[in-house]
Image 1 (cartoon, rainbow, N blue to C red):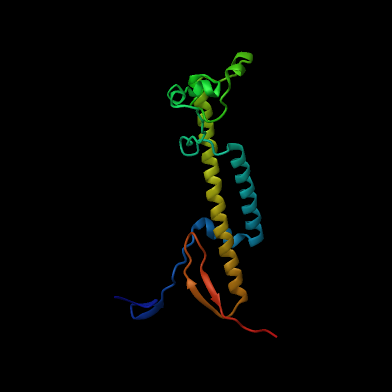
Image 2 (cartoon, rainbow, N blue to C red):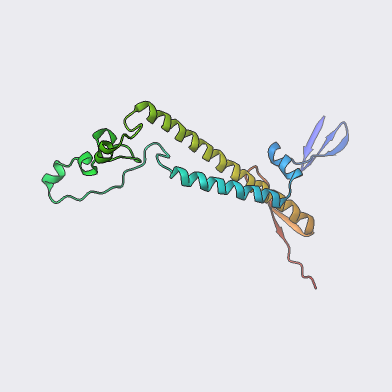
Length: 188
């Protein structure tokens, strides 16, 4: 027979205090036990620098499929608007108009042989590489967020060791540390 009331239970007539489980993943628990706040902070900053480097390389081109066009062309009359040819205005081939980046002009195509401009296999290969780079960027961003949470949790545990009067305001979750409110205590 088992009776459950406010944090304790009875099993076979003996009172047993139930331990409330903290919401910590196994990965976070390993890092919390073995690492210091400064080490985790250093690793998180290194990860943030790698994220910035990847962002600068990718320029977030076609991040969510197709980037919205914001290029505005001005025309003198309605007739000019009706006869407007985007490929002619951009001075490129009609097949290359939909490209958001690396859109060579007709002169460039005539002067030099640009590799992979119209080659669909090369475009698909580049698109696959770009997709892998964005996947790597997303993984690094998630890793940096997790490291930030772990750093906060370690710092909270260190703060709890130093302070004596505390009141728990919010429970710990997988995405955020527990929040405590410390009563003011004057020291001389």
